[in-house]
Image (cartoon, rainbow, N blue to C red; front, side, top):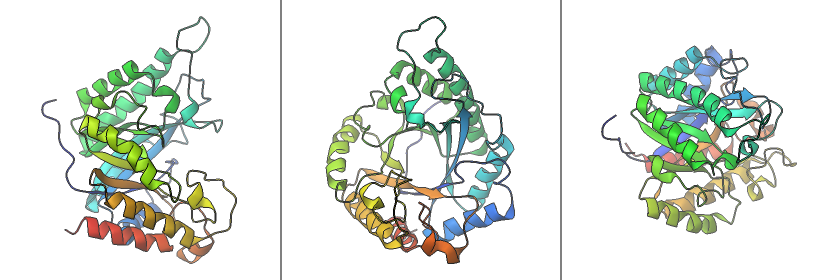
Length: 319
């Protein structure tokens, strides 16, 4: 579709609306949530993010038209709401397993076996879902589109991913990215197929320098912009040491979350190749702000981390 666009400026982003529950994206609470996100954290990018379901990690049908997943109309509504607030938009459709298995474990035999589910069947269903929303992203003017998120066991299927990216490009003219999982940046072999390299930056406090040292050669080798398409830490004691564990036991601790954010921003600021963040996360329906001290999830609303994020984003996007 002609010359590809380039990523301009710093991505000061937040993930909004996860998991995309039908009936929760178009009411007044959702509108207020998005408004507060932009106002409080100084975002310039909103990731409109939602999940479709397949039954298990070995199912080949993605039921993206079915509840509880948000409808296409709700997705379009959220995109337009973000744009009305002056945001650039990343559209990020994701697949989850209905039985609770993490999507990273979606997997099939490398060689087809009669009566067993196959990669080709899964990619056909998943691809229908992704290409459909790539068309929506094009029609709504989204600046970036993610073809997948944390699909670790699928990462080795480079040919299928290249074909899917090519199908997306047939209908979508904007920036295309793939959100690999933490620790996988140097394992994906098809970064040349996308425009922006991105990953989930859930790295432990004290380990950011080591991980950035590992990622930097990958970015340099491909000469493409890099963004942490997810990054965050629960406001919970102990979470800075294991920020990807959303179920880690611990007491609510807003300062622990803020400390983690300070280190992430400080270490990444010294690496010019880190072009921004899409933080995790900001729900469509917020808790009452007075309950922020007892909320121990990722959302920074009303917590010390909110101020840390806003300070960094305003400094990175002075205009």
